[in-house]
Length: 111
Length: 114
Image (cartoon, rainbow over all chains, first blue to last red; front, side, top):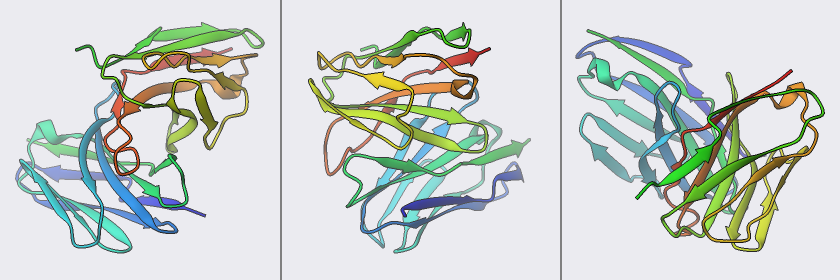
């Protein structure tokens, strides 16, 4: 069964303290892996799509990487405005058009 | 460009009542989907559509109906509401590009079933 697991569930950082969020997946052939940011009371907002192992994408303080079993979202020198829930999702080759989401990591960045 | 819009923002229903959650997009996306989000469980796919007249079930379709008569609109119908359907509902849309590409989400509908 296709599965997505995110860790940790919650992460508290000081401003400027770099860290990484993990997304491990078990799918029968990966078609795409997606990262989203979700602020309280709002819908998820797209960040990155990764298609193959070794691929990396960057946007401001965020960098997403992909291996054959997991993806990392690296946050460099975070600011309080980076506080949000970060969601990982996968689309499998056998999944048609069904995206599977992880439960998310809640990030808190303190000034 | 309004993106993905959802109405209502918040709704309270009694058990057994029916209602329709509205979703519209103005980006000419082929793919549209409905998710529910419950605490600690992430987003779960209810139904999706890859074009007008074409719909399919997701992970948790029971108790929900959908139809897609136009590219723009994708309403979600609750036939007989149950307390287990209390949740936040998100609609999303996307081009069908190497799968479904980037999904754009609406602001959500918060549903409380008493």
